[in-house]
Image (cartoon, rainbow, N blue to C red; front, side):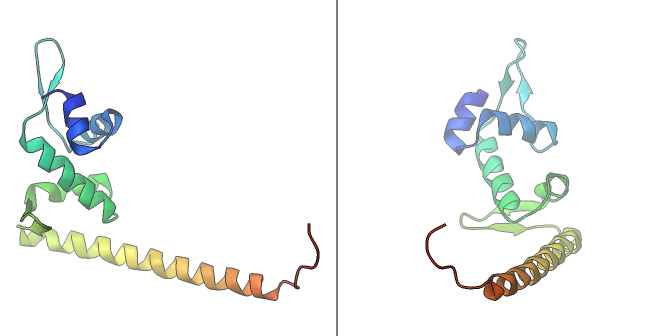
Length: 122
């Protein structure tokens, strides 16, 4: 299938699909005309990529762990034990970012709470 069909079936823009290819996440065949030719399995592959991106993983890590992921119909399942270290490291980075954002929000809450009541319209 051509890139437009893959885009339609996955809901991912053609531009993003090209980006995924540049990042080594997709590997379409090339026709003699230069057009990309995606297989039926690429539909599921794009869905796995989208899931891992929504989990906060960078594309470089996704490229490493993607071959070790299978879809059981409801969720992604890791199939290579050695990638669990990378996934746990990514989770720790997310936890640290959440903690930093929570602390920033608390400071902002204090600033907001310290503001005098507004009277009249601005």
